[in-house]
Every structure is written in structure tokens, then in C-alpha cells.
Amino acid sequence: MKTRTLLISSLLAGLGLLAAPVVTGPKALAASSPIETLDRDSDRTLDLEEVKNAASAEYDQLDKDHDGTLDRKEAGSRIDRKEFSAADTDHDGTLSKDEYLALVEKLFKKADTNNDGTLDANEMRSKAGRALERLLR
Image (cartoon, rainbow, N blue to C red):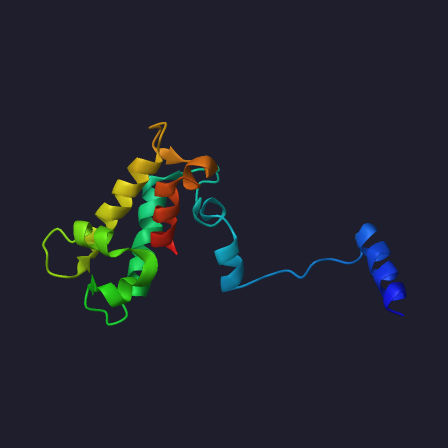
């Protein structure tokens, strides 16, 4: 019986009649690339404006107490202690939206290795690109 089920499943899959489940909702967003989800002008790259718009929206979501700043707890694992301290330019133990966006811009420029003002899929896979992506989701 097990062999018969496996054989039928294999045949249906081969014919394209047995599809993998489609993931939707927040899990689908997490599984897709940032370029697919944030590229508003459909050029298959991200420019600084697209990245900052996404980062600004993410900042608003992270600011759970709506005080206009992110503390270490609100920032969570998106920013390590060293990055947080470096981004906290006024040394008040929190990140304002301007400080957060300055960090985003710094990582964007670091990831933009060909200096064309946009990030492609290869640049998003770099260390700086992956760090930037953490700030956008």
C-alpha cells in the first residue's frame, strides 16, 4: 500500500498535478527576497529611497511603546550591541528614527559595492546586504 501511494504521488508530481503547498501571509514575506517585496519601480534592484521607506515602516512597527525611539529590547536581534552603540550617536541608549535610518544608509552604501546607487541580488547577499535586510524585516 505504501509503495502504491508513493508511486501514484510520483506520477502525479511528474505530471504537475501534485503541487507543493503555497505559503502565504507573513511567512511568505519572510521567505521571499527583499528585492521581490520592496522593489517599487520593478527594476529588480533596490535604491536608497526604497530601502529607507521600508526601514521607516519597520522602525514604526518595532517602536512598540510609540515613544519615537527604539531601545535595545525593541530592536531585538536586528542590531547587535556594537552596531547599536555606534548608531546611537547621542549616546542616550536608544535609537531615534534618524539614527536608525543613518545606520540603514551606512549599510546600504557598504553593500553597494559597484557604487551605482542600487543594490542587486548579489549585493543583498553580501555581509552588509544581509545586515541591511535584518533592519528591513
